[in-house]
Image 1 (cartoon, rainbow, N blue to C red):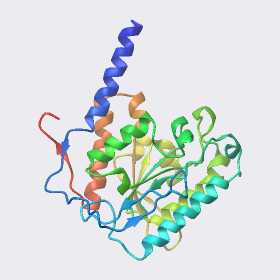
Image 2: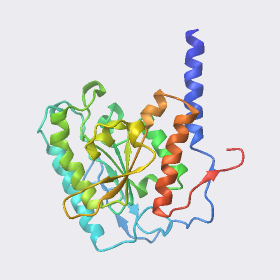
Image 3: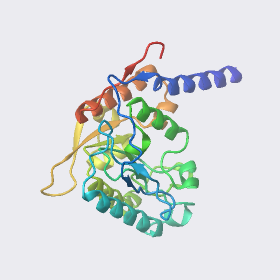
Image 4: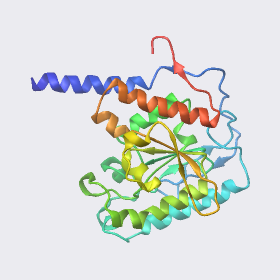
Length: 270
């Protein structure tokens, strides 16, 4: 019986991964421009920024503007401060700080709860099993990971992947808030209930929040940023169902529509 259960789990996870592949974009997508300007993104090693193509008319990146360098500089400053941070005990228990990474002119910003073991080891967000599924979701949207920004509420892994504590959130949230202000994305995708409730300052659960746009306010006098809450990839892996995967895909289609980007459709046989 145990062997049957294991096989069932493996099969379900394979189907979950496969659900977000086999999509075809309506219309023609512009090929990347090798001569396009590059922008540095926050990474595990501040001295080795990741080069990102910054000009693709059908991507999720804004057209290059003078503020791109300012945003990139602010993101690196935040990453540097986070790596030195010892405001709570997580600064002493972590292996690596995980400040987040992505394009400084991204129109979409994904925000999760906190780094896991794989992220702690590499200093990069969403690189474990849940991260691989997030990559598939991003690809299913016709985008590349390098075109978006990915971060977390916490920049350090809580021991044993426990839930973030209130004091940890209070100490760490300003880093994320500064990243959001620097990037100024058109849409924030909150991955999971913890991220959504923290950003929206609400007690509502993910099932109440997902599926419709909310508003995230960066400060008094500033226009709100659209926020779409959806299930965390780790939740999808733990709670396999056709319905849950479709919920996430419906949420992402609304994000693409809001941004005026092509909405992929399942290709034949996909």
